[in-house]
Image 1 (cartoon, helix red, strand yellow):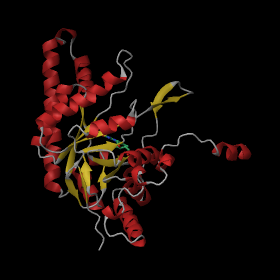
Image 2 (image 1 turned 90 degrees about the vertical axis):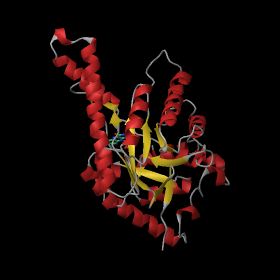
Image 3 (image 1 turned 30 degrees about the vertical axis):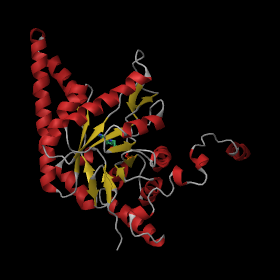
Image 4 (image 1 turned 180 degrees about the vertical axis):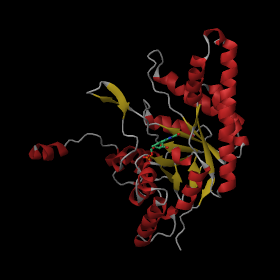
Length: 331
Ligand SMILES: Cc1cc2nc3c(=O)[nH]c(=O)nc-3n(C[C@H](O)[C@H](O)[C@H](O)COP(=O)(O)O)c2cc1C
């Protein structure tokens, strides 16, 4: 009998595949399907403070000029915030009653006081854990990398002071000193880090000269960045790591576990293949474990991390060097 159980951020999971945050986990019906499909845990669609701000701007536009007073702005802000929080809290409590697997709530805020307020609310609604979906696009030319990065540490400190459920941070790979930042973040008291988020990016329509949307879903080739950093960092951090981006099949799950991941998060493959594809991925994992004589994940977790490698330099190689000669022949 194979044991696929694992722990991520202190939560006991029956298997390492977590349905990551997306529209698939924004309703109780979707959440039930993900559990039926075999997910070990579910991260809910994030509650976005930015969405509330946009909604508020829209509402303000519809108000007559004379009503656009600051007080009205404040009440609207509070109304929308509490309405959104109310809906999200119901989603958490309904999801908790509907499924047995852990439910992780996800927050994306702009201002630090909002992160704290939201975190407290989501904990009180019964979330098993929180994932802070944090990313500030560094477009402010007045702020240094150091200042930008300090914001992450401030938010973590404040949230951890207020909640007692486990907190994970989902980050991007876009830090000036990624390795050092991952290590420093892991020592701040958080229970998990999710490496990495994938973002919406604009594209151009060159005929209409319009900004359009780029590919929303990842491809299996997108695994490379998180695989490298998982292998580089898994033995050098003080919290659990989950891999995210480009995990599309059982093979990718195995690779991330070999790199040292406690769990993987999947989204795009579920949009492409449906929630029941989780079971196929688990079957692929079980088949591989049987063929390699492993009965539990600990038998092989981290076996291909940089620390365990006899040739650690291969993980840090970035230039193509000798491969160029091969390509010149083709050209
Ligand atoms: C349609 C869609 C909606 C998403 N919504 C969220 C979200 O609300 N919060 C979040 O943290 N990540 C969100 N993500 C990012 C995913 O959780 C995940 O990190 C990313 O898609 C990379 O994983 P994948 O390669 O398995 O898709 C979303 C992704 C997609 C495709």
